[in-house]
Image 1 (cartoon, rainbow, N blue to C red):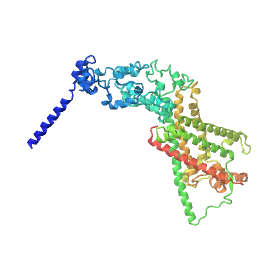
Image 2: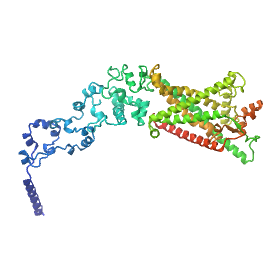
Image 3: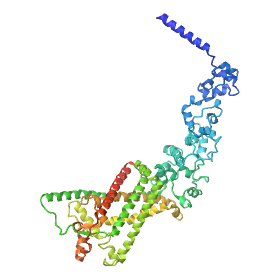
Image 4: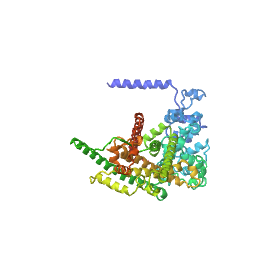
Amino acid sequence: MEKTVSRWVVSSVLAVALLLAAVPLWADTQTCLECHEDVVTAHDFAASVHGASDIGCQDCHVVADLDAHMEGEALPPAVDCATCHDSHSADHAGSVHALAGVGCVECHDGIHRLAATAGNKQSLVNTCSSCHEMDGYAESVHGQAVAEGNADSASCGDCHGVHGVQSLSMADAKTARQFGADVCIRCHGDEEMMERNGVYAHAVHTYLASYHGKSYRLGYPELTATCADCHESHAVFGQHDPRASIHEDNRAATCGKCHEGSTRLFSYFYSHGDHSDFDNYPVLAITFWAMTTLLIGTFSVFWLHSILWMIRGLAENKEKKAALARGEAHIHIPDGHRVYKRFKPYHIFMHLLVIISFLILSLTGLPLKFADQHWAKVMMDWYGGTANAAFGHRIGAVITFVYFGMALVLSIHFLFIRKDIPGIWLQRLFGPDSLMPNFRDIKDVTAMVRWFLWKGPKPTFERWNYWEKFDFIAVFWGMFAIGGSGLMLWFPEFFGLFLPGWVFNVATIVHSDEALLATGFIFSVHFFNTHLRPEKFPMDFVIFNGEMHKEEFVEERGDQWKRYEQLGITEQFVKDKSSSPLYNLILRTFGFVAVAIGVVLFVLILFSVLTGSH
């Protein structure tokens, strides 16, 4: 056994000796430097990042035949830095530098003396500035902080990368503008970093909550202002520096790059206004909490109303079925199936306008409201972008102004012109045919609540009940709140001629929250009161054909029927000919589709409110 091992060792040693004898000796680094001292001295190489890492000359400069090389022949092939730096090389291969023929040594000048620069951002800035004009970077807040050794501040590499630098001048508008926000958000979104450097920590949060930020978040930065549009890319200065694009003397010009004709008043817009910061933005905080209180108060009251109605309505339906099972007939109303007119064609037309405009406004506005949601981006992509959604939103707004104008004309006609209603305008305003709330509504609400609690019979109503009046009055309130604020946001340059820019911040809060109130109310409370309550489920079709049977008329609006009987005018409202089947089919389909869309949107609203960060 020992003889076998000995023979194997001797054979291996002889084989290695023969191999070494057949190949010229490889030179060590010291040998190379004896000849190439004009390139780098031994001392400088030893102090370099390569020398300190025990990387010798032949690790980069491969010499196959040392004797031939020393005689001036057999020059080593070009150095391939990717041999060691494969990941950096891969990044560089697709960069704008590679396309321009700029290789490793053009940036890593003095490659044999190259010192380690990890964490030395100023060194990188110096390298980039040897070729690139820095456009004021050196004097900027970033450049000054880097020069002072602040590792948190942004250098060229923090924004553009080090090896995989992409061309922005050759990129499409979307890519370039996306870059203009992404690189800023990367650092300024780190609130801890911002706080330790004395920088406003909520800039990203407030930007993403703005219209500009929501359009960016939805994937359309080319259609909105990004960070660099307002703050510049390289020449970034504090807001109190006269050189800053956001200095009060320069803001109007900065805003004017997008908002042509913007004034100094216009530039008082709070770009990063935070309604949660009462100390700095008290008007925004008060507006937000006022709208929030209105939202919570309205939904609390009416959702409770709907829940109680649902419980009582289901119980009543069950009682009626039990009565029929016992053979107890329902109260018989003579000619109960006779059809009467409740609405005229122009009422139906107006309601169709309301439905169409409301759906357009909801479908185009809610994705912007909840821009942090995936479903919002899917919808916005389907529209083709925020610009198309904005165009559709404005179409919906125009339709809204049309039916609101019609409502004003009808109201004036009702109060001052109609001959079939007795009394002066004040009597008409608070009379039984008016949609203005009056003392009777207090009585009706009390009776309804008593019915909810099994404390009294279900009340009958006059021509208009209290929830219908609320809906009508809400349209007027909504027109001033949503319509007024919407007009301001539609034409900010015009309103900025005589209103300070912070008014647009207030308008944004009012428009957004009032729209949320309107959509949530219509798609839950109004839908329930009109279509989804047990007495009407799945839909009350009266608004589409204007017809109601006498049985429904007497049961639900018994006081109106009695008044018409006393006046002897019931026959004036008889409808001899019903709507055509095709008309009913088309409008029923439209009605069910509208309700279905509304219910889906309401579910998305609830989901977003509970899970989102809007």
